[in-house]
Length: 171
Image 1 (spheres, helix red, strand yellow):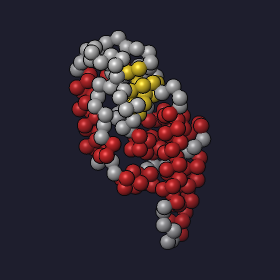
Image 2 (cartoon, rainbow, N blue to C red):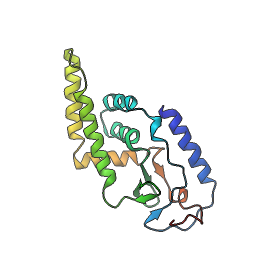
Image 3 (cartoon, helix red, strand yellow):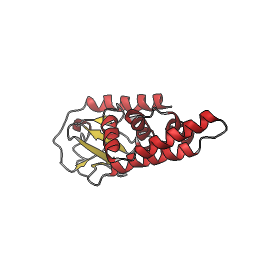
Image 4 (spheres, rainbow, N blue to C red):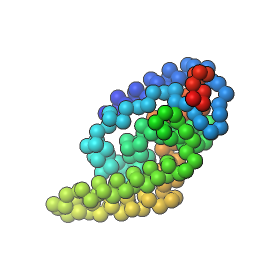
């Protein structure tokens, strides 16, 4: 469940906040927090969220968290998205956060296509979600979704959470 996952991340952040901050390299951050376990959110949980999340930027941000929360963070100190590359958190210099957000919109479109059409209400709901998902791929909506996601507790970080081990710096 998201509650258990959020609590685990919050515990790691609290532990990291108790450590001393260090000087930081502009290009790379070494992961201090252990990478969240992406398997805690099931495919069924994500499919349900894609269908049921509120149809606005905040809802898209929640879907981004569910789909990619294990690979993405926002550093408020640097005002930059960080992407987990398998061994470290690196500044997103290629637009990966935007691509992930567009994939969320595409996944919501797919979720709309999976809604059964056995009654008029279901047909209307399917059409509305599909239209919303298509509109969510627009650049302005992608940027608003990322702005909303940057404030989610699970994704929002500051630079002092990274590179706290002097023996791992730039490793």
